[in-house]
Image (cartoon, rainbow, N blue to C red; front, side, top):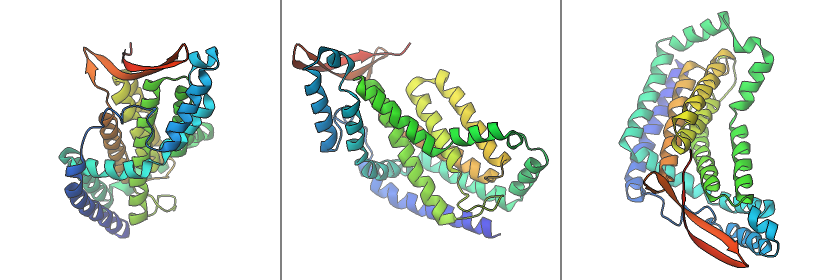
Length: 308
């Protein structure tokens, strides 16, 4: 009953936040402007300075011009843009709960979590996994799935993705990596907030069970990849995210109710954030900002990009 009450409090707090944020978020809900879609135009001055220095250095070396700003400037760009994350997390959270569809599914998932716990389904599912464990029997596989589904792993991989693409001067890749970084940040903030509010126990006695952070982060990754690259990448990513959720129950790190809400939360956050950063298209081609150094002069414009 205590776990049910805690989750009930969490859902009511979520509901209250949704109504307050919805009122504030309606006026702030908008598509990203053309300037915000430009990866090189970081919201922090440090990002602009780092990238400008990289281009200046590149003008002195023909090979660097072809390769892009360089790794040092790329790291500086990411470090500069990270300072904009708190504001973006607040803005995106307001926009998510301002969306009637997102709000409905979040509350439905919260209600489903309470139903699973109150009906005893959580306990029965956990007992089933105790009788027939699969992943936890294979320690190497168990550790691999645990690490692969960890939010820390997702943030680290996304940071490397951004730096590599920025060093190459790939603006589309930078934009996609930053979209993932922002979505993971929004999901992480919401997940942690709900964990601290509810603070119930996992089947194996650990704290901060609801919702599952591994599951929500994995589904965030899958949803963003689905938006950016389509179902050929998205569907395998969803399968992987589902496998992470299965592992959380099999290893008794989470209840089924924790996994249910985590999956819905991650799916909604990933799609909502990625859709905001979708580039305008013409005949199936994305319009993307273009910047290069030719004969010592900086050339900017608009380019067309498409994945095949």
